[in-house]
Image: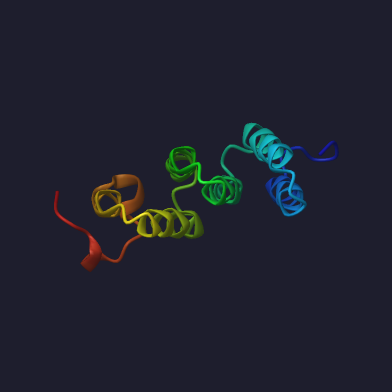
Length: 116
């Protein structure tokens, strides 16, 4: 990352390669370093959060999803991945929160929004 440390896709690809090689700790480090360099890059949050889900670190994943949506609220894949995790965990309160959360509400069709 010496050529352009602010190029989010490079950090995302590098972390993904390390994860596929089974080096989870190094992948986590690269994703985290990437987030320090490019804190607005939604795919970095999504890939790190999805890796944390696969590692069963759900609280860490949830925190990453929420922070990622604050930094990049229009990243639909990040939103979808977050909702998918909560659905797999059968976390109905978290899924209902999505409809009332102002960070996420703009991504939903109007008929889906729930009243608080």
